[in-house]
Length: 222
Image (cartoon, rainbow, N blue to C red; front, side):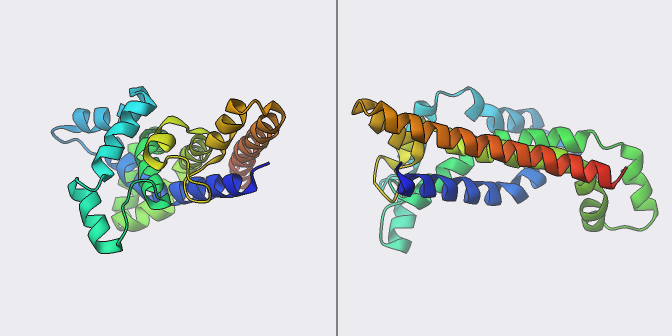
């Protein structure tokens, strides 16, 4: 078992989930309730990671983070090291390729809230922020939680984008998915099997906790 790779994968999945929590709510709510020119284009762009081959997406992200790019050059000047092939670069890539997995379930959850509930809150004098916090988010919570769990599990298993953007640097960018690949390439099937089982159990545990939390919340408000 490569505990360093497991720890790095869990850390990457956790921070990806944390960052996408407010982003998913913001974009999910905006796409659910707002009508604006170019909305279809925004939805298409956000859904691109679902259909693009991971290596293609990883290549473009690698180019965008390279030292010759505006983003990569700015980061290098500010931080004194390149963005590509670092944990920070891996996190940026992880957030981008997980956008649809976080946003789409949250968008569907907000779309499922009856409009008359929101109108009633406005008539009662609640501000938009208080309406979101006290009414919309509790009602949309199953979708929000589902998006976060999918994001967490998907991050654990991602391979193509991680390898393209982060490479295979132990302790920095070598995740469990890459460690499993290395073991298979080295014909160490027993270690690969143990690590695959560990990821499977973590993913099942995350999904189980999600269902349990949703059931508890529904029972509490029944």
